Image (cartoon, rainbow, N blue to C red; front, side, top):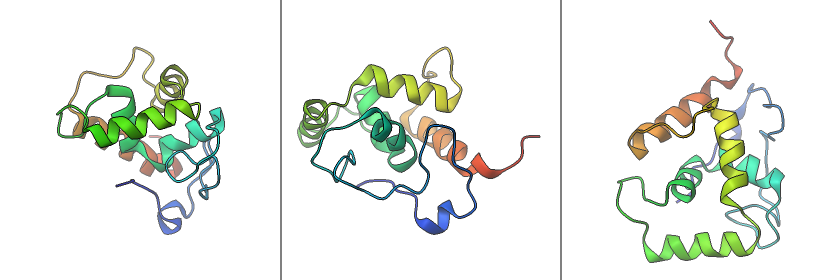
Length: 126
């Protein structure tokens, strides 16, 4: 299901510029909401549901197989609610500091990179 950061995991994490770290699902939440998806909720999706971001952008499941009809249907609902691939990808690439696009790697390796980036938000740079 959704890959969310618990409050304990977020403890002490700085809020990345333009991203809300301590998000609480609301009507506009991508996964649990029913309202319109805004650019803000698309940005927050990166921290709250990184696996769903990758599936939406890459169009395949974490095991590299095509998305199931159920997941494809959920993505269609998200698009109807206003989620745009180009906007989400812009924020995702900026957040990950990948100016040349999503690297060629397995979905699990990409997810690991995203989770590492999220975990390291509060750590000083070497």
